[in-house]
Length: 159
Image (tube, rainbow, N blue to C red; front, side):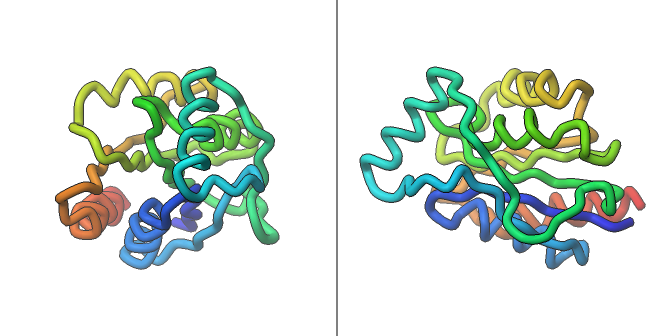
C-alpha cells in the first residue's frame, strides 16, 4: 500500500511524529504550509487566532506530489486553541477530493486527551466523508515518538 504522510508543524514536533510514522510503515513524507512564519509567541498567537476564528488559510503541499498516486494519506496537524489548526483544515478543504479513500488523522497537542472526536468530526465534514482512523498524541511529558510508532504499527497490521 503506497502511503503519503503529510504534516504541518510550527515547532517541529508534528514533523517528528509524522517522520516516525512514515519510517515505521515505509511511507513518503511531505510538508504542507500556508507560507506564513508562525514562529515565536506572536506566531503562536496568530495561529490560535486563525483557529478560533475558523480562518481557512491558503495552503499548498511542498514538492511534486500527486495525491492520486497514493492508496492512503496520513495527515499530521497540531491542535491549537482546542481545535484543528487552520492550515490543516485548509489542506483538507482544498485537497480532500483528490485524496485516496483511506485518510487518517494524527493530531498532536500538549493538553489532555479529551473529546478529540468532536474535532475529528469537523475535519471529516471538510473531507466530505469519515476518516479511516485517527490518533491523538499528547506531546508534553509523554514519549510521543513511541506512541507514534505504536499507531504506525496498527496500520501495518491492517494491511
